Each structure stands twice: as C-alpha cells, then as structure tokens.
Length: 163
Image 1 (cartoon, helix red, strand yellow):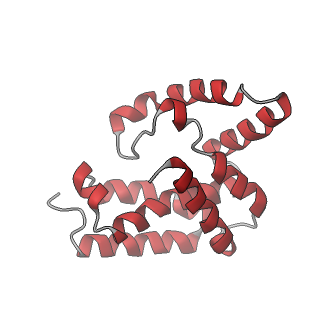
Image 2 (tube, rainbow, N blue to C red):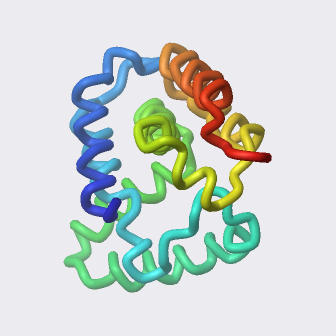
C-alpha cells in the first residue's frame, strides 16, 4: 500500500465510520488530518509499526521532514497543514484520537484480508498487535471491540504463524 492509497483509505473510513467516534468530531478536520498525517514519510521513510529499532529515531527523522516539507508552503498553508500533522501526532483532540484509531485499525483489516502476510513475514506477535490496538479505544470503543475481534480471529486462523 502506497502512502496516498493509505491516506485515501483512512479518509474513506472516516466518512463511513465517524458516528463510531468516542466523542463528536469535526469530520472535515478529521479527513484533512488523515490526508496529511503521513506526508512526512515521503522524506523520513515509513517506519514499520513493529520496527522497534526504527522507532527510536522516528520522531527526529519525521520532525526534520516536517520542517522541510511544510516549509515549502506559503505561511498560512504551512501553519494549517503542519498544525494538522502535529495534532494527529499529539492525539490530544477528539479528531486526532479518532484519526489515530482508524490508522491503527486499517492494517488489521489488511492483514485479516491477506492471510496475515505482513505479520508473518515480519514475525509480528499477537501481543504487539494488541498493544498497538489498545489506543483504538481512545478514539472509538466500538472500533476497539472490532479490533479485538479481528485479533482473536487472526490468532484462531493462525495468521501470526509460529510465534
């Protein structure tokens, strides 16, 4: 999945699932956030969610990329788009918590649909997925329940391989 495809999928998920947000959300703001949330990965590279070594340098790499990419824009656009990116990262607003919930849920759908290929190839353990999925409840309790059901089904179907 490419970054643009990922962001588009998430924006569509927000349109379809926004009534499941834990709190009322500004849908347009949420969609904007989802469309811009991974743009820094164009420069910083995409750190795999379960790459614990890469996670150590992720914040610094993404901050440098944000400065460069958002710095290309006129000041007003820079402030708006960088603000959305920072809001997503901070997870302090209802929109950011819901957007992050979707961002954590979508890869679970992909792995369930493709037989757990990414999880198996990378040696991802069920507890890693459970730990990452725990934050889904901050944005949506019903989506957190769905994530738990996906995890249980994935374990039952052996989508994590011999771990």
